[in-house]
Amino acid sequence: MNHDLSASEKKTWILIQDKIKEKVTPQQFTTWFSGLNLIKLNTNEIHLHAPNSFCREWIENNYIDIVTSSLEEASISNRKVKFIADNNGSPEPELSIQNSTSSPSADSATYINKNYNFDNFLVGPCNRLAHAAALAVSESPGTAYNPLFIHGSVGLGKTHLLHAIFLRLQEGGHKVLYLPCESFVNNYISTIKTGDWNSFRNKYREIDVLLIDDVHFLANSQSTREEFFHTFNALYTRQKQIVLSSDCPPEEIPTIEERLISRFRWGLITRVDPPGFETSVAIIQKKTSLMKMELSYDVTCYLADNVVSSIREIEGTLTNIHRYATMNESKIDLSLVKHIIRGFSKQKRNIGIEKILNTVTKYYGVQLSQLHSKRKLRSITLPRQIAMHLARKLTNLSLGEIGGYMGGRDHTTVMHADDKIKKLKALDRNISSALRKLEDTLTKQHEY
Ligand code: ADP
Ligand code: MG
Image 1 (tube, rainbow, N blue to C red):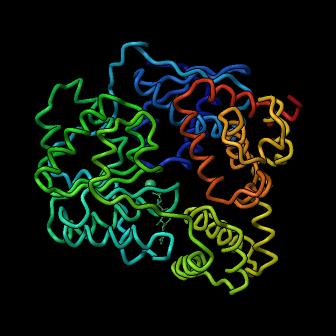
Image 2: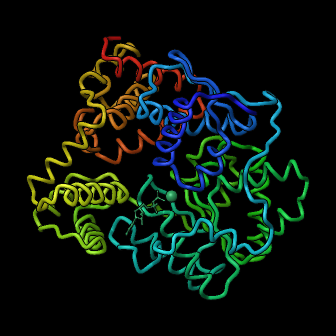
Image 3: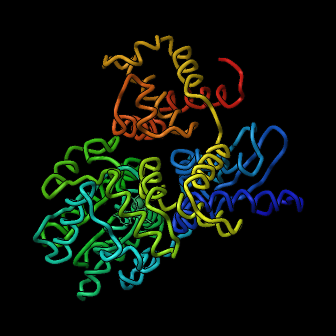
């Protein structure tokens, strides 16, 4: 399609794309966003054209937050976002993926980060079991734990471990295939179109080890789950190793069938947790030495205490500090670090938790005391979890602090609530629309 955009619209679209790129992996960008185009932009609406309706739905279900926040960062807010696809209704996938069936390793190579190896992985109580299992699988694939299923929130090292297994096994001469689950889904969808099932099945079955990252994405496609089930069986019966990662335990992947859950249970299911204080300190020390950046012990402890939700967040904070200190040629001390962390916090939206609690209780017609209580009625747990999710998204409070405002819950409860609402949002239109209304109200600064 040829859409005539003005020069300034073109510039805006490039800016929006850059903002999206900051939030997704290069692979996700190529898969879902490279075919997306701006076709209309005015003061009320923005229309984005997707190459097909499958891609449109996938973006709407999985990436809408990323698109909206990227638009806001590009100063395009308060506009209705509409996705348009050709052949609306009948999905005719035409996704931009390589449908290569040659060497599995060549395909994996596009995803693998060589720095995600075992040497660079720091072990602590939060990830000890997952790390040990990953090592065991690398030493005797197909026999140690099969399948190995690693789950946990984002930024805690699941992908890192999968890449480390890949690198170790490839070194040992095994035929290994690593890919993000979205690529598996994509590949499956494009094979429906080409009908080349032989190549598809050879690619996934003629290997020694299959590593699939983020299998919670299977939740979105029933037919892909079916195919995945057969792939799993074909490999498993030949004692080929399967390693999977997910942002939640198998039984919490929405819409997943019992037969898949039970297969995942045949092997080892292990969780990675957020790092505790000591592990955070060790990680900060390791990362700063790699970055050739010096931090005093009190600064390190301050960061370990205050940046708690994930290892990715620790890395991001260190990069910000490094950049700031280099640009301003300043010495990194505790007051500077506090200043920087607060500065970055201010850049995020600064919405008070009280306001969130107020808005959510009014919207759902519940009392604050009910949110604080331990009651497990859905009419109360839902607004409670929504409040925690919104607090994660819109404030800079730590998990523990949010838990404190929610009747003294601990940080894992907040993390769990946040994950759960993110997932429900993709599947339940009532919830996604409630969230949109609540966020609108909160960000527009007027009372509900
Ligand atoms: P996930 O897949 O769980 O979302 P990643 O594996 O992408 O998380 O990890 C996020 C970042 O944190 C990566 O840069 C990774 O190298 C780093 N990281 C995670 N766990 C560790 C660890 N134990 N030691 C060192 N770096 C880690
Ligand atoms: Mg990952």
